[in-house]
Image (cartoon, rainbow, N blue to C red; front, side, top):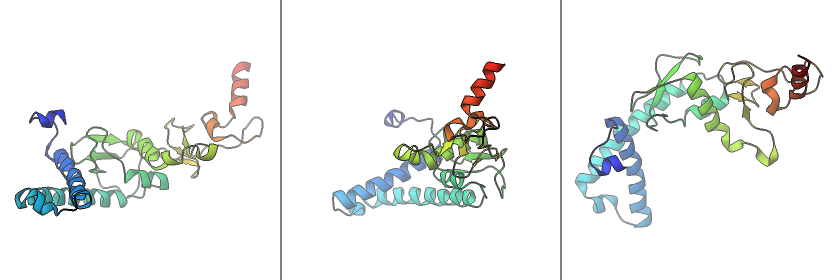
Length: 205
């Protein structure tokens, strides 16, 4: 905001188009809903048409990005849900799409932001997408976390309901190999042992 107020910004054209498009929705809603006025009459034909054109172009590209993301078999419901709402960590833009022709998820795949050009590998975007999809379910009524650190790859992308890691695809052992007890979600990082047995074994060493 400070850069734009001083007539200078490092953001590129597509990033600015995203800002205009989002602002267009807010301005249009405010004028029509709060002011009970016609946006075209309030803003004037020239400004209204310019904003409409930028918004239409940007939304068309956003739809293309969403289509390319939806075409991928993400092999995880949580990942598939979260990826659709993910934003670029660099410019916060919503124009993310696979950087290549992917029919199904691979842990070496990359997402590219069409706004700023930055890329994110799976180690970055998968945990963020899982969090985006499941954070609102975290500790419901004192229950267990819906996702946790994967005991195999260490990423915070192990989805409890799916019993697998959205990043590496591995499944954890839920029964302690030492005491036979159930390993709770918060202790899966020590799988195939529960945290108590893992601690006792470390003392024995």
